[in-house]
Length: 425
Image (cartoon, rainbow, N blue to C red):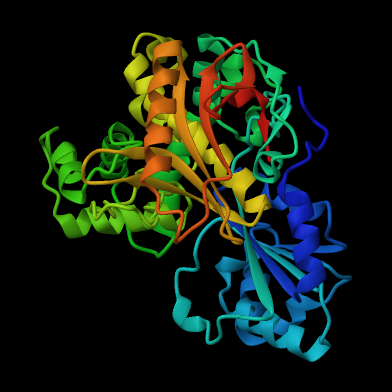
């Protein structure tokens, strides 16, 4: 069983942000490791959810929040959103101290009442989004291919990978929850189911003190899971939810539930990429539907690794969610974001990693097999040819990111083929 701290990619990001700002907010899904990561850096800590002190802390936050800011720095306030007034108190204290690295705030939900926050914290408080563990962080990628080096074009990637389809199905179902790493398969696979139960039974109602029905929440998560890696409209998701019968949903009700899921970092859609193209082909602007971790989709559907092996179409979509999860973490460590591209003619790119300096990489995600790799490479080359390089840079790289492939290599046409079990930031 894994007891020691497993290094996270955001460890260095947190240190860098503390060096540059008075306070850092670490936000993200429950159980993804925010508190554990913050504890490694903090010199003093207040746990707002400590049952023995919670009421006292909440009262102090209401009448004299400064009392909760005392302690050796960096001072960690865990689950700060339970007392939104702390935000302004931290922001003001940072101003008074006029120094960096004073506070770390962690939160697994957006504050229920933002009216208690009068200042954005711009210039004083910076944020860091933490997600479940990537395969590199969990030790399931050897990291022989670096996304950073692909952008720098320093070396041609090479690495071998022996992950089987069974392994990929297990990684999808296990997810990146720290408590699922290093445990038995039975224990590991139970984590996502427990997570979904906690979300639908309490978290989405606690977020804004609006009572929401757990069975409705489950139906919506199932419908969202069936739409994963697609640009499904709210109407199509609503129709899917209604198709089970026995309940009527309005679009406003659906929006309310989806908003709650976003606020507790369960779903995380990907925005459309809008490059300069040579043709006047219209670019689709719909977001692509994803969960913060693919295991949430699996648990919502009530399936496991064996079910995925018997339904490779579904596996491919959920594998895409896994890759997008990892790419988001890797990209953010490089000061970048992940987008999705599709035009009205059907030309698409599963993931575009776009850095702040304007560099970008085009990535097609395929479960494996020579035919799918060829399809992915052809799509990438077609998209590259359609980009107007007089108005923007050429792509730094093109990559087919695979689940099952024996090794990483560069094709004669310049497209990289990389198993997810070789990739790192």
